[in-house]
Each structure stands twice: as C-alpha cells, then as structure tokens.
Length: 261
Image: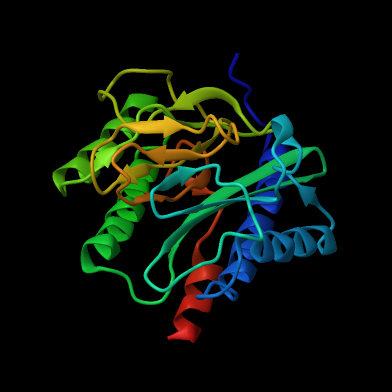
C-alpha cells in the first residue's frame, strides 16, 4: 500500500530533509585527500544529533554507520572505516539519513576529491542532470515509469549505464516505503503518482557497464563488476498537482563547494 501524506506530514519530512541537506554540506567542508571515511561519519553523526535528530542509517537493518560512504567503483552502501582514506582524484558518494519527529530524511551527493579525470567529472554532471530530469516528471498524473524513463534516457544518451538492481523508494515513517522508483523503465508504466506521495529519486550511474556485485565480505557494499567508477545523487520529492515539491536541496553543498574554489 502506498501511503499518502498530509500537508503536516510533508512539512515534517521537509524538516528532516533540510537537515540531511545541511549535514551533507557540513560533510562537504571536510572532503579532501587524507581524510578517512570514518572521520566524515563522525562529523555527520555529531551534526545530526546536535540538531535534534538521530542518524537514520545507524543500526538500520544492522548497518554500522551514520553515512554510507562509497568511493570510486563502490556504487552504494560503503561502510565508514578508519582504514579508507580519500585520495586526490577519487569520487565519493555520501548518502545520509535522519530520523526526527517520527519521519525520515534521505539524500545523497557524489563529491570529487580534488581534481578528477574529465570523463569522471562528466559522469558526475550527467548523473546529477539525470536526477533532475527524473524530478521534472514527479508530478501528479504521471507514472513512476515516466521518472524512470527520463533518468535512463539522459544517462544512456550520454554514454553511461544505469544500475538496475537498486532503486529509489517512498519515504515517510519508514526509510523505505512503496513505491519503488527504478532508474530505468517505460513511460506510462508503473504506479500512478498522486498528491501526497513522497518519493526518493536516486540515480546510480556507471562509467562502464551496468552490472554490479554485492559484497559477500561485509554484506553491504555494492561495487561495479568492471571496477569502473559510479556516481549517485538523491533527492526527496513530494508529489503535487503543480511542479514537483523538492524537499531536499543541494544549495547548501553548492555554497560550500563554491567557497572552496
């Protein structure tokens, strides 16, 4: 069953997602060569708790971190570690969640660590654009497949591949609710988008082939099978009868990245 949110519930989800947005910006201040993924995790946990929420990922399904921090060929669900050190030229996906007042927030952004290869920079750009193309279709009366098609078409038209084993999702009192939001599909197919639905759209786009592996070592980390880099961006969107109501924002991150140039 797909749960429709009241206006009050949407505002609580917005509050969570703004906090997630600010947390990712706080993390962005510290992304540089020599920093460990565990340091980023500790920064995020302290910021979330200081602002009256608890980490949404910590302990979720047994996950051991506040953040999922995934480097280069790691698609998603990388576990923070004191042994994983960021290097010049890496890309790092940071996925963050909060739980506050009974509702969740969830967003992700892939950062460049210093200067990255031009092709990798394009991967980041196109993945983010694919997300925004999907968000444009997140309005009442459309179907999930309209979002999925928009994401897939833009990514593949630019020479990249879309991960199919992992999907976006509904968001509310649970981190993962119905409907699932794949990043590939056909227009006019899938669940009808209705006012009151809140969904997370999160393209995972690979520089190489689309196939992935699920770690049998830690039970969490997903990597590209060909070991080529992967990018991941995520926004939460409330469905309305007008334009999409985006609950998350990258504006805080953009401000930090601009200041660091």
